[in-house]
Length: 231
Ligand SMILES: *Cc1c(COP(=O)(O)O)cnc(C)c1O
View 1: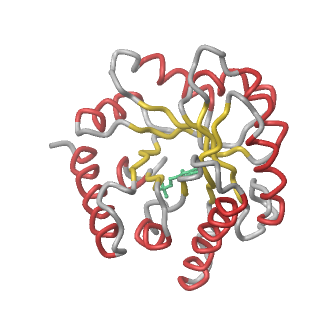
View 2: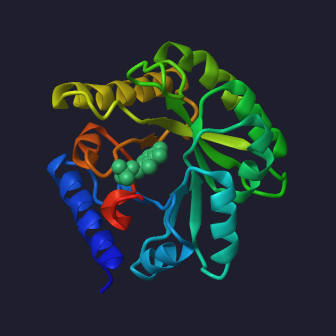
View 3: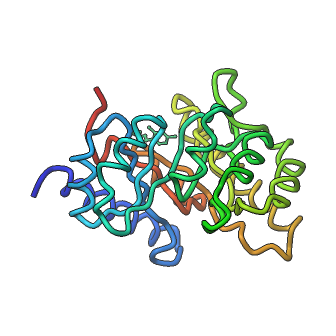
C-alpha cells in the first residue's frame, strides 16, 4: 500500500475511535481529505483507498484537478478557502459544498450564479471563532442575522458552521472554541425549529480531530495526516 492509502486508513480509524469515545453514532463524522497543493495523482491514490470527499482552498488549482479527475465517479469536491467575489460563479458550479462563506454578499452571489438545474449548493458559514485579526469568518454575534438572510436564498442550502480555531492556543481553550461553535449551531437550530438542514459542524484538522469530534464535528478536514507535510 502507498503511504497515502495507509494514511486514509489510519485517519479513518482515528475518526471511528473518537466517534465511539464520544458516544456518538457510527458514521456521524465524515472525512474531508484536504488536497490543496497536492497533485491530482495523490487524490487518485486516496480515491483508490476509498476516499471520495476532497477539500480545496485555491480555485484555479482546484479547477485543474477537478478536470483531470473527471473520470472518477462519485468524487465530491468541497471549497474551503477564502472567497473573492469575482470568483463566485466558478465556485458556485464546480463544487458540491462551500465551507467558507463569511458574508451575505458571497452567499447571494453563489445562490444567483449556481445553475438552476443543479441541486442547491451546500454551504457553511465560516466563523472567526477566536476573533483573530488575520482570519476570515464572521463573528458569532453576526450569525443570527446572516443565517436568517442566507436561509432566504433559493440556490444555496445552509448546512451549518465552519471554523479554523487558533492552533496555538492551549488545549482547554481549543476545546472551548469547538464547543462555542457547536453551541452557536444549536442556537441557530433553536431559532429555526422548522428548518431541518442545520446538521453540519465543519471543524477539526490533522492535529486536533479528536477534540473536534468530542465537541460535535460532522466534517473533519484533514490534510497533512493523509498527504504528508505540505511543501
Ligand atoms: C489546510 C487546511 C486544512 C487541513 O489542515 P491539516 O492541518 O493539514 O490537516 C483544513 N482546513 C482548512 C480550511 C485548511 O486550509
